[in-house]
Image (cartoon, rainbow, N blue to C red; front, top):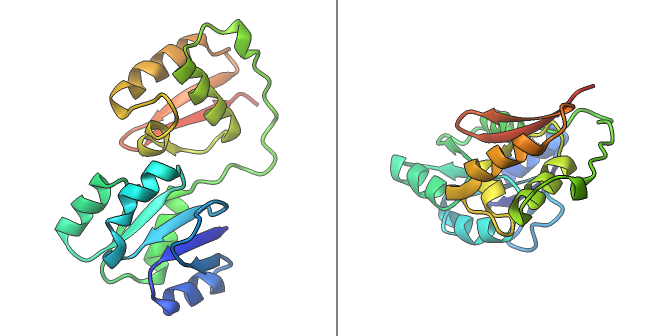
Length: 181
């Protein structure tokens, strides 16, 4: 799993590497990374990152105010000080729930479904990430979607899905597409 660190702590990078993660430093392109960790001095970057990517963001925070700021700016999760590597790894695992190996390929004839463009966008994104929890913040960044209308689009999408596909709400986090096996 690739982690982009917007944090100058080389000790953290070494700890992540010791646990099998690829840890890259920088402020460059976030494409290709599975998660982005934003350090306490880089919290304002969360807003810009959230507008450009659906990659999960984990903020390292020092204070209650930092925690609120990070979440308001689009972070998906946070880790309080002290920023111990084991706690950060736990939050990475909780935030980035990777699909089980070899999920079945799902074919849905989208043309037969009565969906609006935002609902088609949602379905395509869910089908690309089966069994993975997608946060509300990640979904609200998709073209044509907003957080305020997300529930309405999910409800409409659920009504059109075949019985072999379930769109499950993960309370307080987001949604997950489950496939009948």
